[in-house]
Image (tube, rainbow, N blue to C red; front, side, top):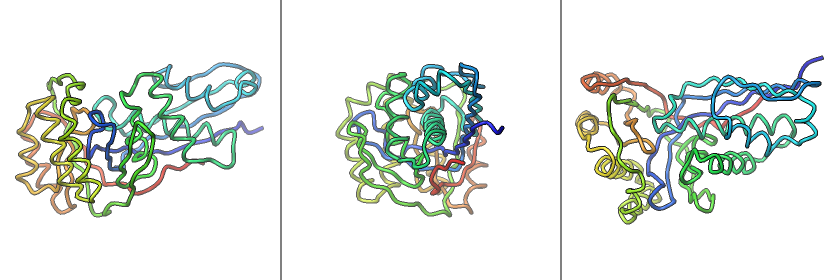
Length: 281
């Protein structure tokens, strides 16, 4: 007898405007992805997984899957990911979305996007893997494209596809110290201005302003950002709270910017932007 199984695919994202200062953020989907496979094995109990973060995973599972199933099945979770963890590239949001989506598929034919996202976001808050719940991150990972959200109210304000000809060069710097992220809240007006630019569709100006603000407050490491701007990227910013730096470029400028950024101490990742929605099988 075939064991009940579901496999979800969710994508990564980068920041356009950081949400910590105002509760409102903007994010852009990228093609790095996470896959979560969940299998139920009747007759046993327990949860097995090939990754850490017990609190987050257990909260999602116990929120979605009824006790009568949990008490009569062994749950096996296998996760594969292209997204480096701990760099601000929304790996936690992608993972929580992927597990939430796969869990809902096991118990329901009709899956509601809002339920998947709310479970992932609320569980992230409960497990303290996010300051705001990262609804902006969750939306970009789940829907793709550009997303603007009010994280406090879990409201999707605006979403639209992005030009598929765009790519993102991600720089993972070595030996960079990050300041206190709560200091971002002292600069609400400036982050609110960046968000207003994004609302108007001026995404690259908003992202550049976000990059300057994050760098000034948390890092004081201007050289990679200036290098990206001087090599004709559309926009460059720290993603999330960093330390990853993401530069948006057209395809024909990828090699030029990669060559320039290789002068700095760190690792480069190249990803196309993503407009595809998460899916489950």
